[in-house]
Length: 139
Image 1 (cartoon, rainbow, N blue to C red):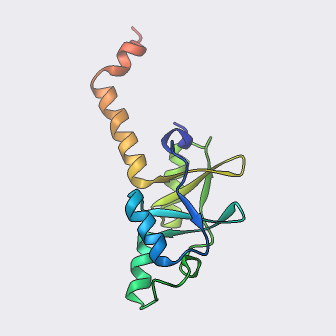
Image 2 (image 1 turned 90 degrees about the vertical axis):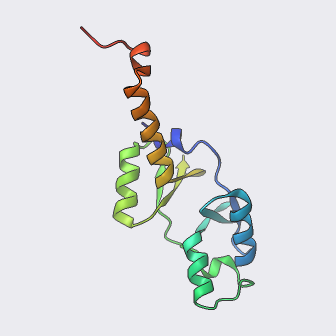
């Protein structure tokens, strides 16, 4: 399965210079764990829930720019790559989210939870015989 199938929605983005407070507010309203920061229409970095928690714990003012706490070396994957490669990248880099690109442009974000949910749905479909209706087993 291609990772672009799982990353169905465009990424939630914000300007790189918004405040940490604004970033947290967007993430809470959109119910997301990763906010993609852009500068001049290009990927600048990402801010995760963990980044915000770490910043608060370190006493960084929520009025500071989100770019101060952003991860700049963002792990990306092309939309036509396999979900197994995405899972390997997450494990290798110790991240829970990947930014998905298509032709070098932002396409979406995929999380560990998204992958697990997709795998579980596929497993349920197989166990429930839904795939047999589409392609009956060979005799």
